[in-house]
Structures are given as structure tokens and as C-alpha cells.
Amino acid sequence: MRVLLLCSEYEGLIKTGGLADACRGIAQGLVDAGHQVTVLLPQYTNLYSRPTGEWHSVYFHLGGRPLGCAVRQLAQASQGGVDIRLLEHHDFFHRERPYDDGDQGYADNPLRFAFFCKAALEWCRQYLPDVDLIHGHDWQTAVTAAYLKQHYAQDPVLGRVPFVFTIHNGAYQLTAGAEWFGKLELAQQQDHFLNMLEQGIRYAAKVNTVSQGYRDELLSEPAANGLARLYQQRQADFVGILNGCDYQQWDPATDLTLIKNFDSTDLSGKAACKQQLKARFHLPAADVPLMVAVSRITGQKGYDYLIPALRQFLLQSPVQVFIVGSGEQHYCRQLYQLQEDFPAQFRFFEGFDETLAHQTEAAGDFFLMPSLFEPCGLNQLYSLKYGAVPLVRLTGGLRDTVVPWPDQAATGIGFSDVSIAALLSALQQAEQLYLQQPAYQAVQLRGMQQNFSWQSSVQSYIQLYQQALTEQFSRS
Image 1 (cartoon, rainbow, N blue to C red):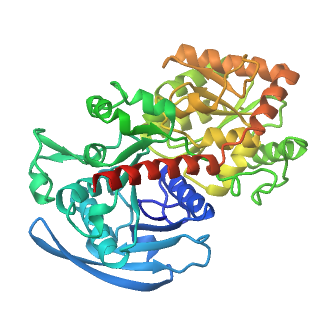
Image 2: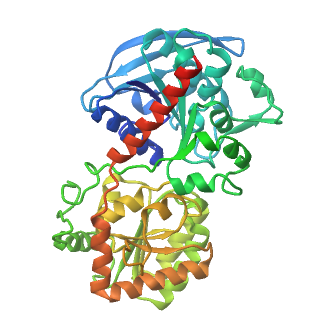
Image 3: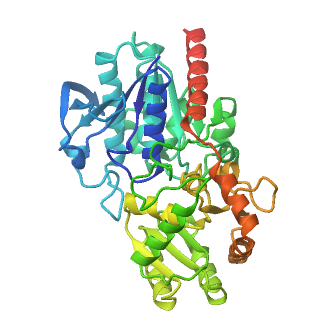
């Protein structure tokens, strides 16, 4: 089948989080399975230097305004057979950051991404008339579903095309005043405000999120962030499909960023990676567990209670901790303070570096993910493969992918309560497990042997597409 995939991020081009990895994984997996995939995303500032080929002009009206854009085909040097198109509009997308100015979301985000959705549909009907299905990702693409239902139901091309909508994080919704219904040519609802994510849930043929655990959580509050009733109404068309892991990029046996490669049959390379990281960041070469994290430094990732739990833990234990990430400055300041207070045990690297992320996974004995919620999570999948035993709060996709010790099939450490005491207990449990090296190694090796490849996930998406197509055909 021919699939048009709409997204605001794509790994290798523009990335602020796991959305980019997932979009690339799905697109590449579909191509590998024999399907034709075109990916369309905005041409942000950093993409203007990319070589492009074929291009089209698209003109249409939105909210009474005449608008236009160019859609350019990205040169195919390293795209794995995926046809990637960049939607160019200088005013809307030629900005340094995709969604915000570093502090606040852009005030015109509703118009920017409604424009992206409308332009995508107009380009599709003119230049991709054999498309079978459109697959959108997160709130940035959500109003595509509404436009298809409200404006293109009788269109000879788009009237037969179902829209599948994937929610990567239901907390990101983008709300705007009720006047935006008219500005964006959307049917007015009883709500006193427009919720962009809601448009996708309400009007898509099929809806999914990125793990079964998170799907179940979204059926009730507070996880649903005010949309539980709508999720419940769409329950028959709402499924969970776990994200996959790209083992071509995340495999310690072949990872070119590592000082020495390793796998589950020979872990000597992991010891070398640990030694290198500690030397680089001036942590003493003590024989103690190294706990690591690579994440956005935000409340969602559990920093409100991770930081005080670590402070207590470092006072009573000789373990070492290394955290990589960027985000909310009040947390970053507290992490710098931990570094000052525990100079032999704690280091914080502010920023994101892809090479360092790989090296951190390879060096860690444990990987910390005490998330308040986690729709799927990718770092626990990387950590399993790299022998960094994940320590996770059992929520969403973390609960679906990590079996907590002391279960006989354990692959990690798990806890449930959002509290300093519960996290501190889990940290102590991890230290005790590490001291029992045969038990620790059994958990570590079992995790390294897990397989969460995109192949299985993509097959689930293909089944969802086929259901959407069958039901669309039966209605037409």
C-alpha cells in the first residue's frame, strides 16, 4: 500500500524527543515490509541546507486567507528508500526551534500546524492521488482528521482515504481560544476552547498510542488530561502499539561510538566503556555501581522526587550517578548543586549529545527512569540492550517492557508509588542486587537478550491500516 506519513519530527532531520525516532522507525519498517511511504514534515531552518530535488507549489485558502507553500523532495542519499518531502513556508517554519522560542510556545502554533495539515491534504490530492492511507502523529497533525471529514468527504481522491492517528504523548494537546475554530475552518464544538489533539481523536478512523499500558491509562483521569470521556467513546477504535527499537543504531556489538564493543556473551567491552566515561568526567575509579540517566530534565521525568531521593541515597551509599540532559532550569540548578555536594559521586552534563547518549548507556550499570508517566519510553529499550539494568516506575510502556526483580524473569528494578520513599527503596534494591553479582548478571543478560525490534510493531500498524481501509471501503 502507499502511505503518507505526516509528522513534525523525523530522526536524522529534526528531533526534540522520541517522536522523531518513532516516526523514522515506522516509516523505515513499512518500507522494509514492501510498502511505499512518503513522509511529509515542515522545512525548519536547519533543513534549508539539505539538498532537494523535485518540488511542487501548492495554493489554497484557510480562514479566508489565500496561502501557499512549496513541497520539496529531499535527496535520497541515506533515507533507506523512504520518500521524504519538506513543506516550505518561510513565515511559519523558518524558525530556529520547531514549537517554541525556548521559553514559550509560538502564539501562532494553531495556525502554523493547521496550515501544515491543510497543505498536506492539498498536496496529496494533487500530487499523490494513489495514496491509500494517511498516518498522522501527535497534535501537530491532528486537525488533518477533521479536515478530511469536514471538507474532503466528497473529494474523489481524499474522500476514500482513511486517517490513522498516533498519540505519542497525550499531555501535549495545544489548546487555543474558541475563536480559532473559525480561523482554522473547523466545525464549532460546545467547548469554550479548541483542543488540537482532540480533533485527531474525535475524527480519525483509527487511533493508537505507543504502548498497551499507556492506552489503558488514557481511558481515565488524570492520565487522560481531560479527554478520558473521548478516549472511552473511541475505545473500539483505540489500540496500543508498542514502539520499537532501531537495533541498527542501538546495538553495543556494532556501535561505532563506543571505545570497545560488547554483547551478552562478552561484557569486557562494557567495563572499558564504564572506565572511559568515569575518566572523562573525573569520577573516581571505585568499584561501585554507576547509575546513569539520559533524559529531558522535566517534571514528567520524575525530577521532583528523583533529586531529593538521590540526595538521601548518596549520603548513605558509595554509588556513583551520571545524568545527561537539558530542560527546566530549576531542576538543572539542583543537579549542579548535587555535583558540588557530592564531588566524588555525582556528575551532571547539561545538554544533549547523541554520541554521549550511546556512551552513557554503555557505561551504566543501572539506568534511571522514574517517570511520572511514560507513553512508551525508548531509553529503557536501549538500556536493556546495553546491559544498563533499567530502574523504572511501572507506568505506561515501562510497565510493558521491564519485568521487575525479584521475578524469575526479571529484566530490571521497578516501583509504583510516586514518592521519595518508594524511589529510595528501589535505589537501595538496585544496590543490593549489584552486590549479588550472579543475580545481577542474570538480570542484566536477560535484558540484553530481549528483542523489541520495529518489525513486530510495524506488523501491528499494517493490521491497523488494513482495518481502517476495510471499514472505509464498506462505508463507500
